[in-house]
Length: 67
Image (cartoon, rainbow, N blue to C red; front, side):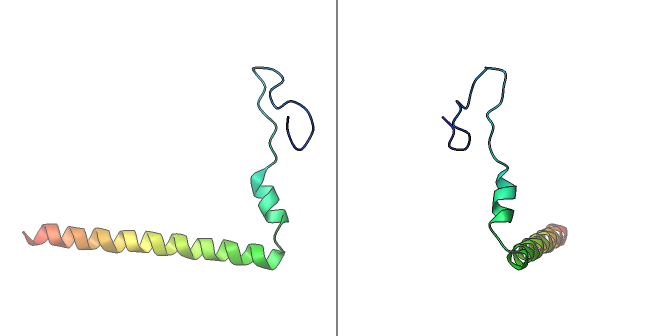
């Protein structure tokens, strides 16, 4: 049984289970300022990751080119 609607989760083999939208639950549990901060932090982490991949790629290219 589902906790949200008190109906069996799988009523028919071809139907999908009805789950709440998890992203919506997380957004609703935070204030606008908290959501903005989380989004900003995720953006900076993505930029930092892409930058570090680029730096390591350049280092690897230079190390292979020295030989």
